[in-house]
Length: 103
Image 1 (cartoon, rainbow, N blue to C red):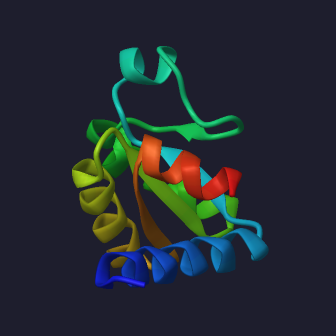
Image 2 (cartoon, one colour):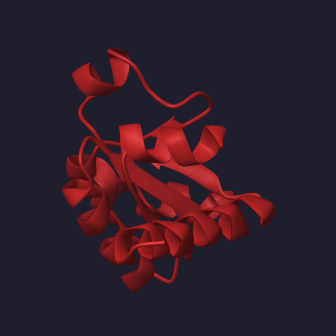
């Protein structure tokens, strides 16, 4: 197993740990991106709206797995959520997270 396979294995395990705790999957892409296809069951709050809707996320009272198109916006959203005392993990981009969820 290579180094990147090792890292992906750790990320997959963390995602599975979050899922076992009833995590909510949060899509932070734009509305048009979300409407063109999303992970089934994902909630949608565009990154630009997250600061105004953080209390909504807090009310879920569950850990959050955040994703976007490639992972950059998800990283920003994850940092913001954790700064607001929400247990969150960056699930990365939609394609990689979808692959992890179907394995």
